[in-house]
Image (cartoon, rainbow, N blue to C red):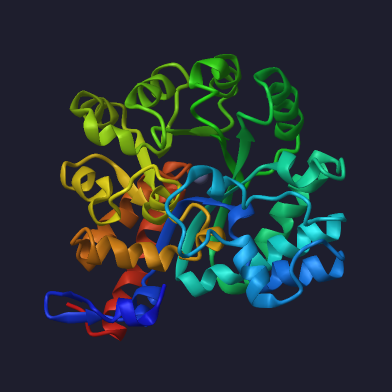
Length: 363
Ligand SMILES: [Zn+2]
């Protein structure tokens, strides 16, 4: 986010600068580790591994980010995810550690960080279990050092693996018994791989009862995919779910089923899923009482971090600081924790908000 833009945000007589929004305590439920590598660290890794990428840092940055002057485009966006950065287990550990260490600059209080073990392991045929263990270890260390609370979701990519391949991988990973892993995510190409193709996998997850689930749906697909994800895949949360804004019956169903939509303003614009960023559905859905949360998705690729999305939520959608607090309390409510943990998070979060308001003299 550019500081100049943020200086223009004014609510109830107060001006919110980028610094203030950056310090605002945030709860985030939808961010991909693969989309949050700091550019400087990725650059270091590319030099170390002698990869075929630009040697000039500014050019390197351009090559890994969604182009600033580009029209929204889903394929250009997806093209930025590469899985050949890592050459060793140490690389996976290192890039995870530095990514999580960077979260403090976005004012994160609690995050459910998702990653695909398959993404990190595929190119070098690393052991998927070892990769999973290392990512959690690195993330936990960085989070502890920065006083951020962290949990993890395992992402399965619908375009990269069939249901038949996902199930044995899931069965292996669940045996790791890592308590910080709290959910399973289905990501990737919604259009060609509809939720119906993954019914058995999500029935198994539901039946095991170890993890909650979140499904990317209604991002570039119609609301029928959100219906199917909730009804047939038992989704506890929906990634994006922007097409719900056109379907009032679905909005009632989402409220009744207590499902939450993890929305991502910048990402939805850049991928072309929602063309009018200034009227992103998050504002309307929030005002209608549909459970929604603000998330960054892939901040490093977007070149806009979560703070930038908060800026847009205030400036474009007209939300106040207290609306943002409500949205964060909503995110805690829909996090994949038990009730006891949620109550504690709630109390601690409100403490952080009080300290934040005091520091910036916000009523
Ligand atoms: Zn996503």
